Structures are given as structure tokens and as C-alpha cells.
Length: 363
Image 1 (cartoon, rainbow, N blue to C red):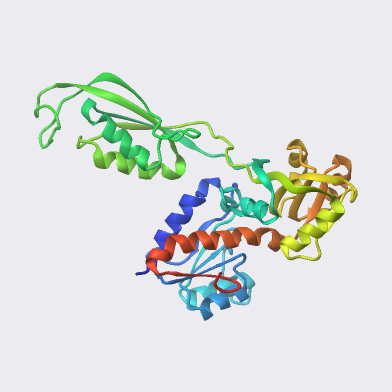
Image 2: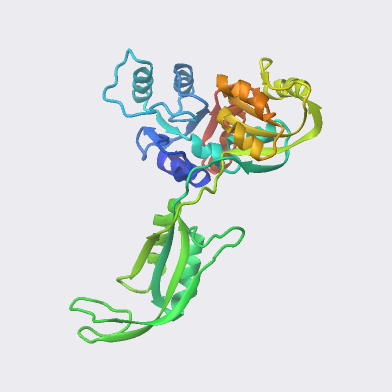
């Protein structure tokens, strides 16, 4: 039993919601038909020609990559251009493409959690800047006897989560009034007669990625044929910080840590910027290009920052801030997260007998 592209995209949006991505990050379904049936999936870092060829060789119907193929609006698709060549090859083979980028970087269990785990960090916590998250308050009016059913339905769909508490709601009693017109089928009252009903006003917080699902769940259980409800946008909050910081299994000199990271990341060319004799106890990590998080790492009381790429001015800034900066390779620092994503998909798609491959094969 296969899955559809739409079902897989819905699952990805649950574990790494689109509004967790940084502004203007082109994530989601970039090529393909949401209704397409999927029996084989390839998960990779980049949608480069080698990866596309691998997906075609394995007869995959879906390619999921960390980096998007189309980063900005395009006015033409030329087959002598690298991006156009990839688009042509994917379309010819009817392979859909989904990108899960900065939303997977910040997600629990995503790129930076996987990187922290790969190098053995302990007592890991988030740090640094993160995308602003839009939240809403959904207010609905319902008969008193349906209050619990409506709250339960909204909670099951993702409303009412505050910290470590679920099903958080406020409700208060009031009086609603209405006059059913010809053709109406009122839950309470008669056509042409003014009615006064005892109702409860229910308020619950809803994250933007769950708003439509919560509304639909509420409407399914609500007894009225015409439901009165309001949606209020709230202030945005940067809840999902990009980086992670934690303690090493044991303190070590920066020069020793470089060798340790080289072994853990499988990259013998890890570079060190800063003081090689500094004793390192805590390390901040940002997969990919994250050397601009040096000041955030310092504020998080990290002794060192591991990232994939380092800009030149950050290489000397590390000395001034007394935070050792390690350049571990863009691909090497993001691949743990790509493999973790493949594992999550494999678990989700196992009941459908959908095969999930990684660029290096099945893992």
C-alpha cells in the first residue's frame, strides 16, 4: 500500500512546520503532483545531478532534500542550466521534490539536535536566534452541554498547548440570540421566532500550522449548522531557536577536540580558529553555514562553536570573543540531520511498505 506525496508532505509539516522556517526560505513541495502515489523515497542533502540520477536509478517517485532546488523566483527553465537540468530530469521521471530546510534545522530532533548527538553532547539546550512563530486564539460559542466535546476535538487537533500542558482552554457562560429564517434547521428554536440560548464562549491558543485542522475538528463536532467563531492573530514569538549547546563527555583542549570532531564527523579537514590550548567544556553547534552565531554562542557561555562554514571575519573574531570556532564542513555537519529525517520517514512509512533510501543506500 503506497502513500501519496500529499500525505508525506503533511507528515513533514507536522514534524517540521513550515512557519518554523526562516523568512523567504523556499521549503515544501517544489516539483510534482500532491496526489502522486509513492512507493520509494530518496532522502538526500542536495538535489544535485548525482542525487537525481540516484533517485531515477532506484525508481523513486519522491525525492526529499534538505537544500531546496529552487531558491528564488525563476522566469525561465533552460536545460543547459544546472537547475533547469535537474527540473527537466525530475519531470521526465515524474519524481516529486520536497525541500525541508531551516524548518528541519530548528525542529526538535532535527539537524542541530542530530549534530549535537553525533558529537556526544550532554544536557543539550537550544540557543541563538530563531524564526518568529505566529499563533492565533480561536474563540467559538457552543451550547453548554457540548463544551467538553468541542474542547476535546480542538485539543486533539493541536489547540490548547502551553508549555508542558495540553487541553488548555478558557470558557465562560453567556447568552446568545438569533432568529432562524426560512429554510434553517436550528439546533434550538423555531423558524421566525427570536431565540435566546445559554452558550459557553471557549478560547484556545492555536499554532498557525494547526489552525485549519483545529477549525475543521471544531466544526465536525459542533451541533449548530451555522457556527459562530472568531480567529484572532496574536503577537509572534521566537520559540524555536536554531542552535544547540551542551557539555562534552569530558573536557579537552581545543586541539584535542579538533581531532575528536574530525573522527565523529568523518572529516579529517576540520579547521580550528582561536586558541588551540583553550580547555573546552561546552560546545555550541549550528549545522551548515552558522559562524554568525559566534556572539550567540558566547552569550550561551559556550567555550566553542562548531559549524559547517566559517566566514573570514569570524575566524579572527573567535580570538577576540575567546570562543574557539571549528569549521567541520557544510555537508558533514548537516548529514546527521538528513539521516535522522530518513529514519523518521522510515518509521512513518513502514506500515505502507514504502521504501526509504538515503544517498548512500538504505540505512
